[in-house]
Image (cartoon, rainbow, N blue to C red; front, side):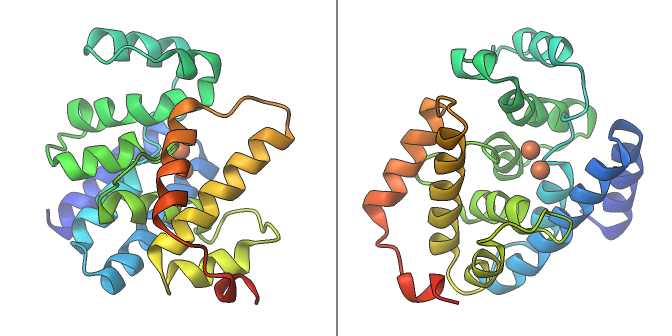
Length: 200
Ligand code: FE
Ligand code: FE
C-alpha cells in the first residue's frame, strides 16, 4: 500500500468519525508506525491498522449489530452486554468491505484491539498498545511508564495495559469481558512482569 493509498483511506475515514476520534486515529497510526520501526513490523501495515482500528466507532450501535449479523460474525453476549466492545469486530468487517483491506493481520489487529486475545501477532500487539499510548490520550498515572515500556519491551507494555484495563473495569463495578480475561490470563502466565520498567 502506497502513501497515496493511505492518504485516500484517511480522507474516507475523516468523513466517518468525529474530530477527536479522527485525531486519535492519526495518533494511533503514527504511534503504530514508530513501534513498527522498532519491532521490525511492516510500517505500512502498522499505519493502516492503526488508522482504521476505530473506523466503526462512530456508527450507531444498532447498525454495528446489523452489519455483524449480516456478515456472519454476530455479536457475542459480552459485546451485547457492553456495546463499547462492538466497534472492534464490526470495524474489521467495515475495514474489509468499505476500505478494501484484505490483509488478515491488519483485520485481526482491528478485530482484537479492544479485548486482545491469546497469542497475538506483533502487529496486533502494536495496535493494542498504540491505542492506549498515542499522544492525544488522557494522561493516566501509569502513562509515562507504559509509553516507555512500549518502546522497550512490547510484551511488558501489553501485559501492563491489560492489567490496568482489567483493574479499571473492575473498579467501576463492571464485569470484565471473558475474552479480555482470557487474553490477560494467557499473558500473565507467559510473562513475568518486569518491575524495573514500572519504577520510573
Ligand atoms: Fe477502539
Ligand atoms: Fe482507539
